[in-house]
Amino acid sequence: MDHRTLAERIESWRHSFQTQSDEELIKAAKRELGNSGWVQLKGYYLNELRDELHHRGLADTGAAQTLDRRVIFLRDTPDR
Image (tube, rainbow, N blue to C red):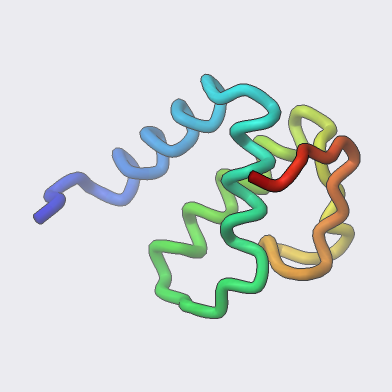
């Protein structure tokens, strides 16, 4: 069982996303598209992922607060 606090998990995700390549970050986001499974923790994860995509100028979700089918990747990567 993971005993980290929410703040520790968020910081871990933030660091992970900041160190990933653009391609890795886009692939991580694509894995979440259309994934309807939802828990509160996933919301925090997706928020950090969305923030890093925006920070790098890789995606635009418009008014969407989560990554779903409304995301527009500004620089795409091939699906693998």
